[in-house]
Image (cartoon, rainbow, N blue to C red):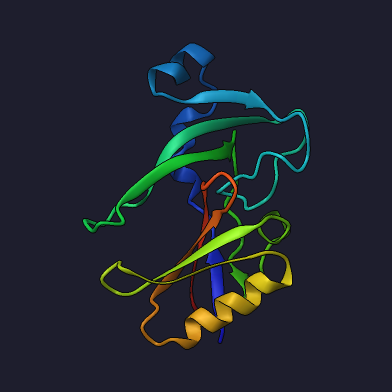
Length: 155
């Protein structure tokens, strides 16, 4: 089953670029300098930040729909992040190299599938979830910290 994984859009975070730590704090955002790679996975570029690169840690509402699954969590975004290319039928390394929790939702934004996977198993699990015609989209989360990572849709 064909799928596409998408990152968040850079324009959602442009206003943070170049702000001081004090200005960021007013928005409940923290700035870090990446000190290891991997270690700071950007939700826009779907790549890990380079060592020395500035990243923002902020709360993001990744499930805004009015259901029991409405949710937000902390995410990292690189300063001046650029949009990722859609990942058609493959899982980027920043995702596949980590243990992921995959959550399949129907058109009413209700969770109907859930499992964990890592490495090549992530693609297999996405294909399995999308074989279920009721699955409209799949959210990928970093399993250990629970942070939102990306979303996958049918291709």
